[in-house]
Length: 302
Ligand code: EPU
Image (cartoon, rainbow, N blue to C red; front, side, top):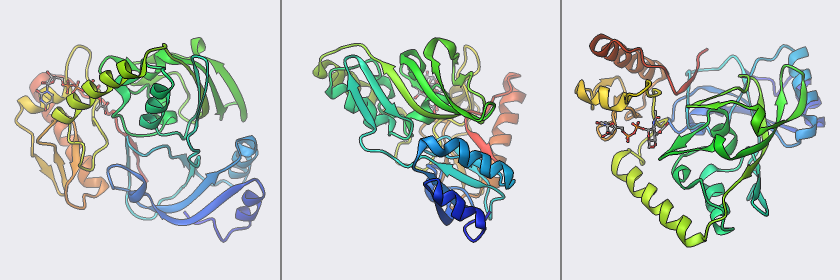
């Protein structure tokens, strides 16, 4: 969707919003799949409610793009614009055992920054790609750690009220790859309370997790991490592997031969290649195990 030539673009600019025309979202996602649209960079958090009201009045559909690491976007010209919080460096400030973090901060960079300040707990999250805001939305986790355990406060734009609000950690539900945030809430800042730990101990934990991840996951290929959530008590990756589907393809999309719950864009895969592969694997798992796997990856269709 193109709004850069419309009068609304000038009004957005007055609110500190930069409109970048015709951005390829394939370059903004770890899967390397996605069409083209205008990208709106929200430099000022205080004007977000007004910018959102303007988009609503002008009936401009929009989606919020975080780190793009758990996302499958349709191809072609997209019928919506994408909103984005520009990265802030380092995006983290430490005060005692509290880390004040911008949602756009890189998750791995945040884990490292906290470690250098002798704050641990998040070692397992070191190799999880994406932004802190995105990790929070889905309660990202790995190797026994979930980010939600450390959240003390979240500042967010709530579409329901049209205002910026602050929630206490206790008022948010963090479940396995799921939170009580509304789909159109936008996380802006978070306060994490972390256990004090010597840097070298944290580093040792980080190394162990990195090794495990390198040994089992296809880190240098275009993927969105795990495609499906694990069913209660089970492992999607193991079931797909048991069905001998590693290497199974739909067009340019392929089940990883390293970890069967990672689907790879091996050769200019389209969104529909990836969706076909997801549906095909889901049906096969259902046929063999009677379990309907739920997507972990978020899909933006046209
Ligand atoms: N397995 C296989 N074949 C495979 C993959 C896995 O047999 O191709 C087996 C493993 O041998 C193991 C079991 O399945 O016995 C579980 O595998 P793994 O330890 O790799 O964990 P997972 O359940 O597949 C989860 C998260 C990962 C996270 C790891 C490590 C989900 C959907 N995935 O994977 O998170 O990194 O644990 O804690 O919960 C993600 O969410 O995108 C993600 C990568």
